[in-house]
Image 1 (cartoon, rainbow, N blue to C red):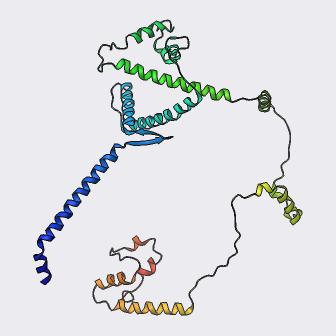
Image 2 (tube, rainbow, N blue to C red; image 1 turned 30 degrees about the vertical axis):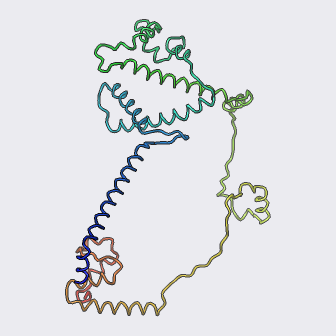
Length: 333
């Protein structure tokens, strides 16, 4: 009662302490929330060779690829599997752009505007442009059709649902075409760097076409009688010396000799264990209530007590099943 009286006398101080704690908790929560918001602005989703990929960049690229896939499917919605596939393709595309753009820059690979014009309306036109702007009757490529198409990029086709869609599609195709030209130049550079001497190519050519007819007799190793072959320590040492490189070990090893001792109970240990079990059996037999058996198991057993009643058929994996159900009730206590 004295303690309660002192608390009542200092109730104002107690209320102040509780209020200060609540205010401090709210301030800490607000600080953490602001910190989380600030951290959320650092939306880096990946780092490739020191170049960061932001969530905004990835999301924008992913939306563009999703939109392009839906346009190819004539407005049909994408399922989850298709969206996951496009997500992986988008990520791979962005990673490859970062890696290869740095390689192109170091190697001095470039694609000029004249090359892009040549791919669009020149003699070495891009295959997709050749296919799209060929005369259906003559199957001849018409550069004038490409020039007319490029001059009317800002004029949308009749029934277009999105203004400027024609120009967006062409710019996307042009970017992919330029990327393909970069990749082709890089592949050509790598292929030209692989030099095969004429003697090596001739040797490979003749080796692949040379054939030999011969007869042989096989003597299986397992059929050799070990008693007919005598291998001495000198023979083994000579072989090891001549082929030492085959038995070289880079990792350091140790050879250990050890002995084992089997730990088995002595007669005295067995007698003591039986004596302890008999004492526990006597305590178990003294139980007057049905709940005493479960209490006994909880006290002395390492296995938790299971109160489920099991039939004999449900104990198929138990090794003492037959002997357990053949005991008399009096023996079970």
